[in-house]
Image 1 (cartoon, rainbow, N blue to C red):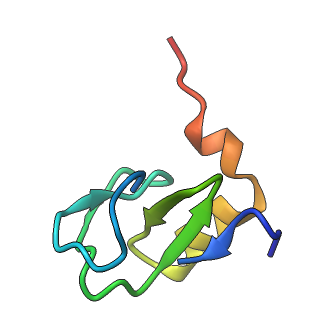
Image 2: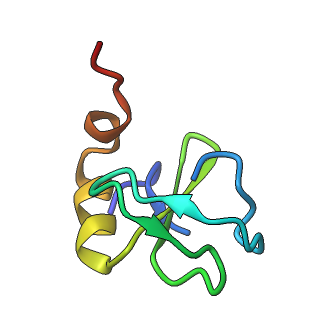
Length: 68
């Protein structure tokens, strides 16, 4: 796993109970307990499963780019 995509949704603290959206599959996920999490460029992202977290960690930018 790269240094930039450490296991840990943008701007949402890991202790928040606000729902988040998995950037890989688009599923709404609970942020507490924070089970599948990654940090990238100062933001915390939550995932529905380890597989989505691993896909994100391999190439975070491909899941964050906005396509018009």
